[in-house]
Length: 420
Image (cartoon, rainbow, N blue to C red; front, top):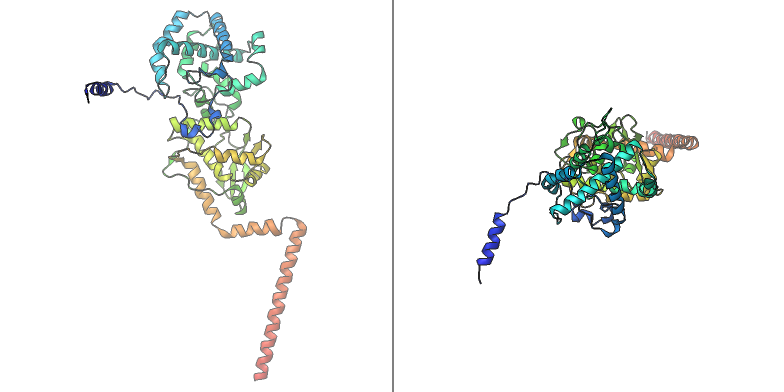
């Protein structure tokens, strides 16, 4: 066997430079996670970036993106040579933003990103200023298409780095008079529905999936720390109710993940379950698996909800308490949703707030007399007539017991008298 060629090949491998991946922020969802629900990570109408660019199902939107690209150039009067040159310089960093090696050459990648970035910037600009045309009315403003575009722009695999969108936007910024909004302001406006905490544009993000995650977090300075141990168990809503725990909607905090247990009451912020809830949570969890494994606050929250919700009965309780707003119609579907979100997900830590929650609930539920008290109230004292009947039965039982003791005492006393 001639080893010469093999040695040359091995030496070539040894000579390869290792590309730094710390810039990476856009990931192909790991196979063991995505195989459980492939469609949750694939865009329905529009591809953004290189990972789904060649999907034949999405080619209808390519024409629309090119129209928006031309409108962007016409509106901003940007110098195309300057724009392309700027993206060309950024291409090495752009390429490293993706977790896998891209098969596109430099020219192909720059062209794809150029059209996609300009499409997004122009779409967000029109949305911010409501500067729509007849063409928009026939395309992106159709309700079904508008909804799907917004959803597609939040998928982890369907992203371009935010720094690149800002670069394109800043190169072409117009309206020299007055306030010029940042591209982050435009982005927050476009995804305003998800900004329930009304966050101001004073944070940084990697892309739109990261923006969605940020909408669900507190400001970073107030996020709880990480516990050294994972949560091992939390009783279901049904079990907690039987143990005497009461449930209330947490109206005092805009932070969706703000679960608190105090004085026997578990306070949970309202959560609305709609058709897109599963997709959005799956993509945020995938982002945390790949990019935030040691600060996975969304995953923590879903884990707690998964413990609380095991069956339809658990959802019934949370719906009755107005904690869960179920737009799916079927409470069993909500239970199945939460029971499936963390399949094949690796959890390495949990936040200290939820670890304390587990500790408090465990301590409360170990007091066995609470469960007996709740069972008595639920089964025998849940209305006026049943309460009166229960009290009457207890009185009769007590009188019967007294009568029996008295009779036995009389017999014993009589027997002792005879013996004397």
